[in-house]
Image 1 (cartoon, rainbow, N blue to C red):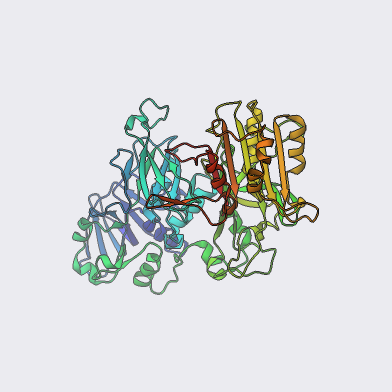
Image 2 (tube, rainbow, N blue to C red):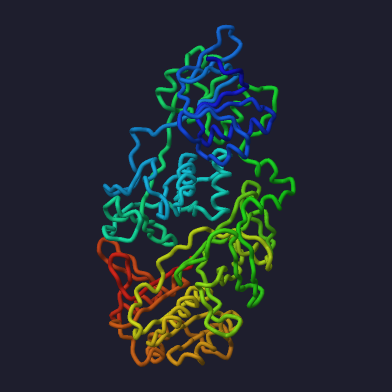
Length: 597
């Protein structure tokens, strides 16, 4: 039964199909029909927002030229549609696909499908494509805690609907996007049988994602999902006649290499291809996204509204290049373990405090700059009591302005330097990191914190947590900076010393004329650290936490079973010589570290 005439019929409610339907409507082509074989489309919330016309549960049976030769006829198992043009947007998994990295044989590792139970589970989705975004959106909608490992791909290769949905998920803190990171191996750890995790009925150990980049910690999940590169279904191509293809008004979503004999375009450009083929006299505007169309129109407020999801509530300069700031998110909570980190972001459209010029700024002007920062802690509340992390709806950060050099033009901190309380900012949805106090289980043990500069930030939170828990053993915090003014928490740490007899704070400025230049390594070799800890550094009851400059930490490298340390002796080497051991996920030790660059 013929169901009327349409300007455009889109087969498949994928991200690419939705993008073309939305952009067509905005260009004045309102008579557009999407036929979707399933019961939902990729991003259901876009349907009422854009008043899309959807035929659910309709399976394509043929696309042919109308008998009079003027139109195309799209036939499904429910209706027949006359139309000027057709976009075939359905995609399916390539059966030849194999995982590009080692993965365990586990019921918790999936390909292109989500587990049955998603609510309140940790899920990593690997891939940067419209398919990946569709899976992320679905998992977030169903209540999952989602991390997307995008592997360095430019989000500009997504369809406009996919790109906008990804920004929406970030803005609403419903997903964490790792744009530069992708795991190089998926392992398996532990056995969740008997675990309190709601995912345990699936059986098997928890998958763990290993990253080659030291800045990205190994992450454990309830489930890992690979989002593959999708292909055009053979069954769909089989029901499109050669006569219909020959009109040039049937466009397939995908990669031209799949079949050079038919018009094919990727999701980020298919709207323009459809417009050129079906509506050559009409300027259709699906190219890329709304942001790219208005980037230089002065709509900075709109850019901020689209990207930012938190407010700066406190901005206290220790001096012009060093600040303590607090951020309150619009959505979600601020719960975290002391020592973990979160990401902050500002747009390239924001002004810089210096005269440096970002590389490729014209191409990046609408993009968001994201950097990870350890979460600090105010230590005391406004009444002088130890501040509680549980009751706070803010996160505190301790950040230094990074100066430009011939080899590096920093992007975020020169823009952050101009912000003040009330300004808007991006806050990542997921707090992460395993640099925590999980290993400190004896309240009488010795706990030592050594840091450089703003590496002191996580230690503020960890030390406060130890005192909240009633830790009775010695606690020592040593930090090196250039000058006294670079110690943003000096007075608060001195107050902690006065209040707790088991606490020692050892600030060490290295460029003050009246202070001998010493480094944290000297505290160990000269015996001062042992004295501050009560007389000795006993590896049987001492944990050491190191945060900051990698040269201070001095991690070894192991090649072919041979371990070598850096030429400049770091703290790790000195501690190992005294019987300490580096901590690893499957090999616990008492030296814990967090490198800052």
